[in-house]
Length: 114
Image 1 (cartoon, rainbow, N blue to C red):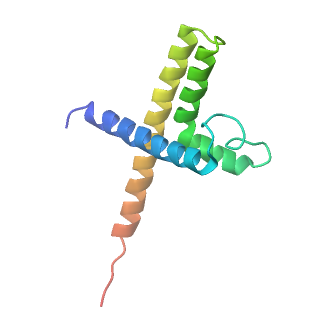
Image 2 (cartoon, rainbow, N blue to C red):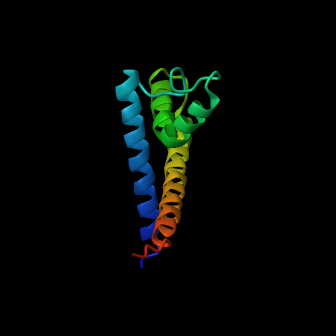
């Protein structure tokens, strides 16, 4: 197997999961996804952590692009946020693949006898 194939697959899995979670959250709330209410709240820590873990790269990209449009960050900071979002999506994909592999192993290890 090509050594670059697995990281690319993990990145695609992470990016897909992030996009699906972020789009669903935007559809439900009717607001742009960002590191702000109603997605991230000190009153709901666990929900905020779950939302940030799943849709964090999408949130970071939205906030970075909005800050760039408003002139609050420069090009280097925007590139840094982009690199962070890519690494975050890759890490999310690795975690999701590991969870899927673990769950498949658990399901496949049970023997059903008649």
